[in-house]
Image (cartoon, rainbow, N blue to C red; front, top):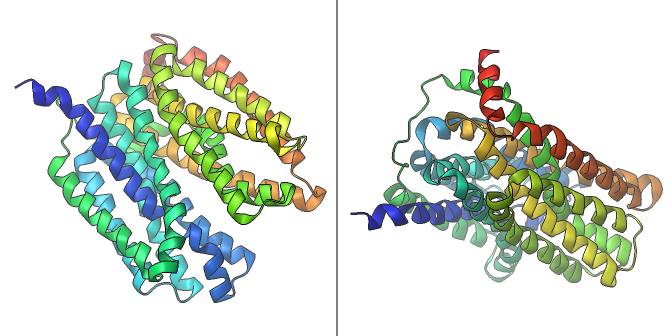
Length: 407
């Protein structure tokens, strides 16, 4: 009788991670096809940028209500629901909605639903694992963000081989299979209690929590930095070092893979050393890496080492941020806090590319932009080592939460 419950958290972790990966795969389908749609539909640069940005922005902002709904209804309901809902825009885009920019934007808007899956998994798993194991569990779950890399590596190849509809059809089949499997396999953690407050009231209560804004600021830097580099790194490498498209894309893939691998490592280290220490060191490494790369030193070996250090640090810092949420957020608001923090990270990823593009247009180089990243990272490291460290002291979180609730 004890064997099944003992292994069930691992099953829940595997299922949640698969759901995260499949939904993120679907969420990222339009990005690899952006250049192709630009040529086929004669899109301007702004239209192409919006084509990629709309699903990401909707997916990021949508995490706020989805996280709160997960607190209320649980991951067993929300994972199948989000996956099934994502099938509709995926099939629309693949079968009919890719002949005009209006159709693509409409489909892309609803494709953003897939990006909300992250806000389902964190509160779901938080209930299944004890505090001393949550950092590793949430870090492993974060590996599911590699679904975007799978999309980047397979979408164009499938279109070239079998036509535009193929990657969308494959994604829809996987989403449907996962939705059915999740409905059959997922279970809520024993002893879970759903909050009874209305959604709006819980969101207002979440906004009053100090941890919501502390973790949001940190995640906007670490995960926002990861997103920004995964989007903009090929352009940077082609412009500054003259790399070909294939070489630049491969190096970007290496950056993404290292960041994804380091996310569970960051969670694991947070369980042992504390998330504040891991975040402080991670942000310090980003500070150094960005400062070095601001001088545009030779790509081999200095530039490559600088980017790999930043990739590892950003991945570990992302894992540590949600280990911090697991410690500081009230149990009945983990989903709502996760939604806000996840939104901050997603939105944070689109500020740096805009800044870098503007800086390059003004100065003909990216050094100033990387210098700004170094300054932001060191400021975040100081913030973590001071204000966040005080909040994470034993007993301090409970007292702060009680005061926030009274206010």
